[in-house]
Image (cartoon, rainbow, N blue to C red):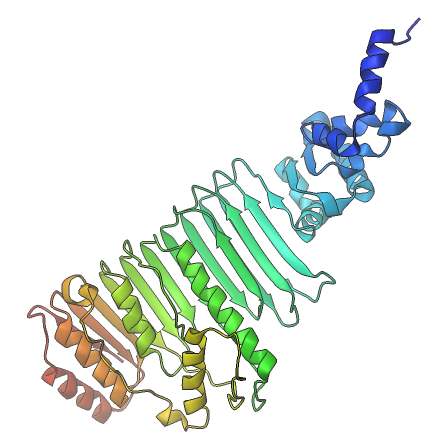
Length: 413
């Protein structure tokens, strides 16, 4: 009475005889509460569920909040969390007022998991990274409905690798702000992004300290990783970029319509003109120059170094101006041999913020006005305060040659 038929016992024994990896794979398709119940089958099954790579938690089967909370806590305490590949949590909004939910999500993220949220449309990852005892921090996002992703990470002493990989074919808006991360890698595996904000300031060296060879290699890696990000977002229509000077092979931004560019180095003209060349359909440009001088670039690049040639060019420019005075912290503007097609045929508005009126800024503005044949408006925002300086600026701009007869210049003080 009540015993299992022999044919069912034989089938059960055959299943139990399968390798643990196969059993884990089978259980990975079950909700976690069902996978846990297999512990009653036999001693062979007692701990199999603790290695299942996928965790699915749903509060529908638990009418009481405390029962569901206790179950999830028990699973996370007993599970081999290093094996998690997917973490699915479905619960009522009321749960998010309870501290355990933060612990659950933190446990998933710490184990390098952020995978498969089928209806998630907006995701914000915002936080401060401390010196965790991990070799790297990898976040994998698989969210088929995701449209907006904001990644804002700040750190002071996290020196390990930080990697983010997304698989979100409907992603439209990407906002990335990385402060203090020296080793980062982003992989945006979709061509759907139409709007991107990328803020990549380099890690600052304490004032007065010289960069050593290790620092140089680190800066070179940051430079190359920043360039790699552009290849993932080359289809954007709207791009806001804050970064240090970047040299290297930029992709073509054929769809780019609006560009906001904030650069932190003295020699920013070349990168600006390169972006104009690589954005043939650009219509609206805003750029700003913020000089940041935190480094002493006196360390020579060692012979035989594997550092990329593009970064070497940037580094040599840094060395040239590391000892100059603030008012001389500029590089001469050299116009490109061929006027970018975006400037001659498409640019309608240009805004220059923090205009100081240095000799090379004047050269750049004159070049843009002269060659902007369809330009409708140039806005100059400056911090000049005296009436004498304002008058001088007005008179200076009045004399500049304009390629477009309909272009107006708006001075903002």
